[in-house]
Length: 126
Image 1 (tube, one colour):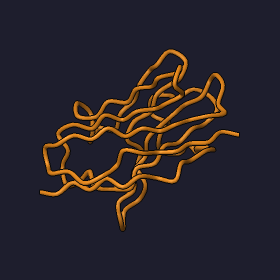
Image 2 (cartoon, rainbow, N blue to C red):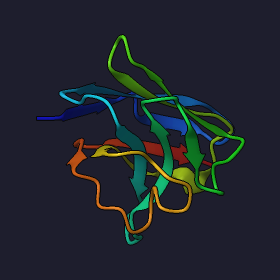
Image 3 (tube, rainbow, N blue to C red):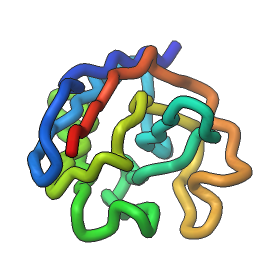
């Protein structure tokens, strides 16, 4: 059973940085790990994803160049480094895991991730 526990959310001013962590356990090889977010009144959207085998990364256009997804396989931890934060980044952020590789164009929309964390709130003030 895969378990995911997020941490690192908080409040920050626009232009600031935060690093989210996701302690992951129970997964083996060929998993796609991802970050999603959902703001009040909006649909959930994919932020970034990474293949645990090989480390190929994928990003939503809205966060490219500002956010970095990474993993520490030895520590079984997924990270999301968020820089140059904007008020529109305010949302609940979720860690997700799914069997199989992440693929460009299909890692977010249309893919039903099997495992989810409880979420961590990120609030960016202007």
